[in-house]
Length: 89
Image (tube, rainbow, N blue to C red; front, top):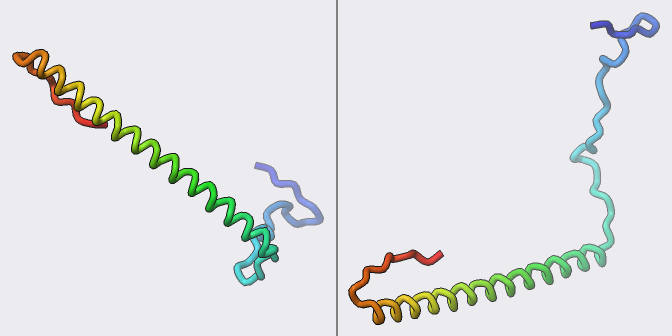
């Protein structure tokens, strides 16, 4: 491999400067109102997700009850049949 030379020194093999700011550097200033607005937005999104999850869970429960009722009806209609016990999702 050939490395180009410039005035007797190898080019491109020197130490690289750090692109990451050191941890001792002060954090950049962020307007507290911006942070508050971002937190409120995240809180609103979390609240919406919690509501959606509760509605989804209620739907699962309703489907489970309906499945149970249908299974009981099938067992009454066909008392001599053996139906598989399907676990709830």
